[in-house]
Image 1: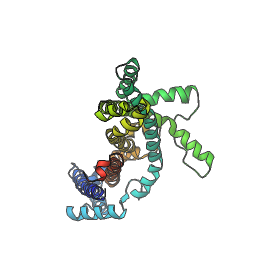
Image 2: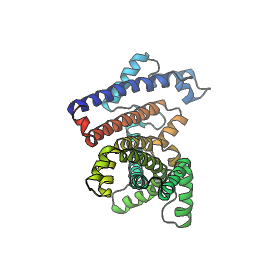
Image 3: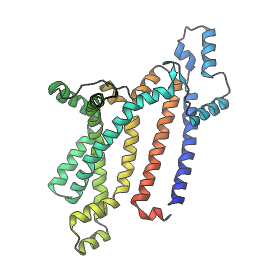
Length: 318
């Protein structure tokens, strides 16, 4: 188990280093002068030179990369020229929206998907299986922003149960916490439904494959109830592909919510990236993209640890 975890940790660190090289290099080779793009084409040479010095663009490429990497390691992501604020503060402010939204959406998709997938697998080939997987196919095909608009029309405009958009902040009281959660309900459902459809199909396929194994037939032959075999033996051995998809989904929900955050006017991390790209604020783009890359690598590391928990063979180093 220890050797397995050390190997995975070494792979994660190496991947993070390579990713930092890629992110920095891609943003550096983009055409155009970032300082000129921010100030406009008619700016004076003195103002342009001052901004280039402030952004560190007059320094050698290797020195800028080492300074940027050192700042990342120490938690200094630089200072946004557009917002006149440290990037770390911007990220913390936006994570207070994006992280709870991603966690709620992932929880909802898991609660929906795993029972549906196991239900369909237990009745494979029957009408219930066809209906469940047909609905899952619709969920995969329909864009999440269409779900968002439909939910707004029904629950916010029609029934007026939840707000249609905006985020009031978490505040200090239970009432303010509840209002913040109400503002995240529709966005979370909009994100969860398509992800639940994907996860349900993966769960169904993995469970059907496991149900055909010899040890499942042996357990049934020994007289174990089918429900126990299904939930305690089949599902646990089918969890590795399910955990993989869940890890990828959480990374997507954390970083890929630009459309949903714009539909509901949520000040989240995805919207920050969109605004930074629009305003050519490359310091923010570099910092936030690298943070998201690190979060994906960390999530994959956690998924690898979950593999070892689910599969005893990995704990033995096999």
